[in-house]
Length: 361
Ligand code: GN1
Ligand code: MG
Image 1: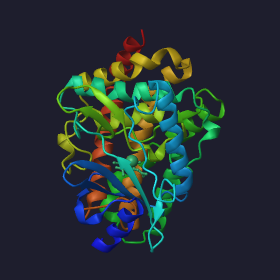
Image 2: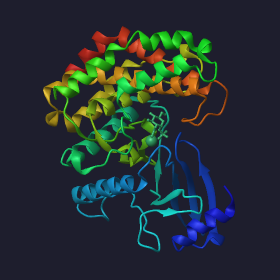
Image 3: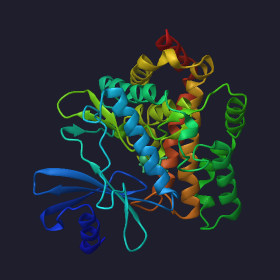
Image 4: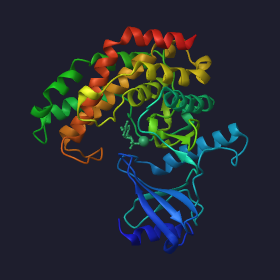
């Protein structure tokens, strides 16, 4: 992106672009993010919201403001809340548009923070999950109907599986033959979607305001201690279930390698990390969960591994139009990796279920 466009945005926020140093933050798969350092003294987090994915950026920002307000109320005031504020621009708006119709948002940068891509110790897993548990405890007071759904059908497993079926039928890029074992792996597990739908329909699993993207690297930790500050990436905060949030933690915490590690033999479901994250998440939260939720947490992990793996696989078959890729077959590698983890979860199911039960006591 050209310097001029950055200038246009920064001026909108009353920041002189001449005194800024801008570097790209490359972790996300969807939005474009930049760290803006002003006069080498303070920093902001600038993001271009991908409005092809988030079709109602205005509504998304309203959700974000609601979360920040709830956190401010919880922590005893905006100044005491560790959640970064969204900066208003000169027009007193929380976002601005550029000439091409993109939406930009500026956030405070949380000083003295860091994040982890891998849970290398149980302490990191425990504390990271405790961050999401604390987040959920506050969100439990929020009404799901007050929040817009920023991506309709985001965690609708049935739809995700149908999208894969369609991609296999149409085979738009001729890649189906490269992914036969992965496609079969998913088609063998179609009943997960029916089971999830039933649980939701019968209200065995209630809707709550949830985070829906509880990757380990969405937790900010203090720089010098294994203590969380807050959770970030609030774009998918919307009506959802704790099954998704617990499940996505199992998905992103338990393996010793990243989700795009191409060698599936390196993917491991580490039981000690599983136990630590389960303890951390349930610590603050367990008293507010229903019996239905407690009984189906592990099912949530299966759902999320199957769902995200399926989304990677579908994107591979459709020509990589959704997730950013850095190499050919990147999305296929990602899906293979997720399915390797799911297979291990299925094999260890009894043991993992026993761990969850003991953490609920
Ligand atoms: C995307 O962009 P990022 O890294 O925050 C995706 C999540 C996936 C994740 C997989 C809006 O999140 O659902 O779990 O990639 N977010 C969206 O790493 O699709
Ligand atoms: Mg995200």
